[in-house]
Image (cartoon, rainbow, N blue to C red):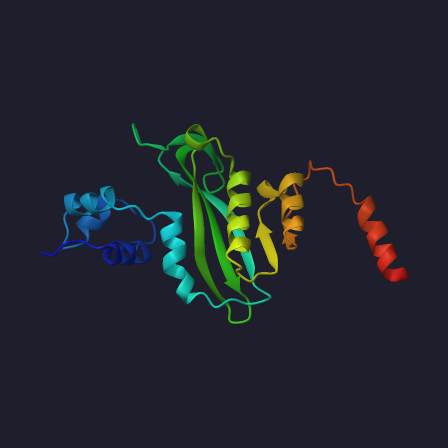
Amino acid sequence: MGNVTRLDYCQYLLSTPINYTLTHFADHSERFSHDMINRLLAGDRITPHLVGENVSPYIIPSEQGYVIFDDTVLDKRYSRNIALVRRQYSGNAHGVIKGIGVVTCVYVNPTIDQFWIIDYRIYDPDCDGKTKLVHVQEMLSMLVYHKLKFESVLMDSWYATKDLMLHIEKLGKRYYCPLKENRLVDDSNLFVRCARQRIN
C-alpha cells in the first residue's frame, strides 16, 4: 500500500460526479485509507501561485483570448468547526448556506477551444479584509503584470460594479457581464463616443 499523491487525489476529483469527501474516496479505493488521504491534504497547500506556476507551461495564449471570473461556495452546511466557513449566498443552492467561498479565474483560448484554471482566491474577509471584487481586481492586475495575452473579461452580474468596470477599462480590456434589473446605467457618454466615431 503506497502513499497517496496529489495525482491520486486529483484523479479522484475528476472522476467523482457528486461526492468529493475523503470518506467517499477511501470507500472506493483499495489502496488508500481515510487517514492517509487526510494526512496528505493536511500537510499539502496548493496555493494560487503554485497553480499558476504549474499550469503556465501548458497555456496556449491568444490575442483573442479571454478570462472568466466566477465564484462558487463549497457547501459546508453540516460542518461544525471548519476554518473559513461562513454564511454566504450560493447560486447553486439558491440561498444562503454555510460554506467556503472561492473566486476562480479561467483562461480561454477560443481559437483552439481550450481553457485552463490559472488562479483562485479564498474568500475570507475576516482574515484579509478583502471582498470578492478586490480579489478579481488583484487577479486581473497579476495577469497584466505577467503579460498574459487576452482581449476580454467575462464575469457574472455580481461583479458588474462601476469600480471594477473602470479598473478593466484602465487595463485596456473589454468586458462582458449581465446587469441586474435594479442597476442604473448612464450611457450618455456612450452615445457621444459613438457619434464622434461616425463623424470621424
